[in-house]
Image (tube, rainbow, N blue to C red; front, side):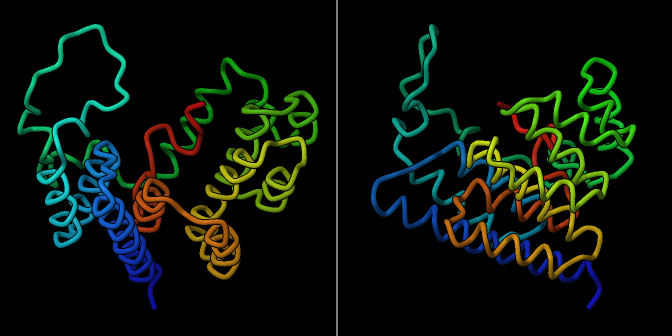
Length: 229
């Protein structure tokens, strides 16, 4: 089976599972409207119309308060949610938000980071152990693991993901990137093994969105492969 076909099958699986989660939450009165809109956008750009329609139905059904809950702002919010927040743009206009994965673009992103931050430069130079020793723990060590996964240095990236110096959620972040990058390189069984590990502790709807985009050959999130905090 061609890799692209397998990728779309996996993307479809994660979209169907993700929308099921969002629908169950909605039945319990829990509407994460930001996640639902992100889901609708991803499903739309992947041309999975039925999944997108189910998400849009949730957006239309969500109470106005679900859109503002937890929001911190000093501006006066409208009493009624604008219609635009209950829908999404066309697939063509969403292309820019979820562009096709181009390795040269991602590596270019790494090179850009390397101009100002040493741990990225050391990875590009093949000085992996030096990069790790200078990074300490936390987000920089996670970024090293993510970088090595994109560069195809999988054994070293996995050792970073298993490093006890990393918090569990940061280990998970590196494993998440490994799932996508191993799959892209045709190392499907290795990707599936790590994905099964992540599945065993549960995947939320956000993660399903990212996986669907990644398996379908899109950038999984803005700024991929790096975390935003």
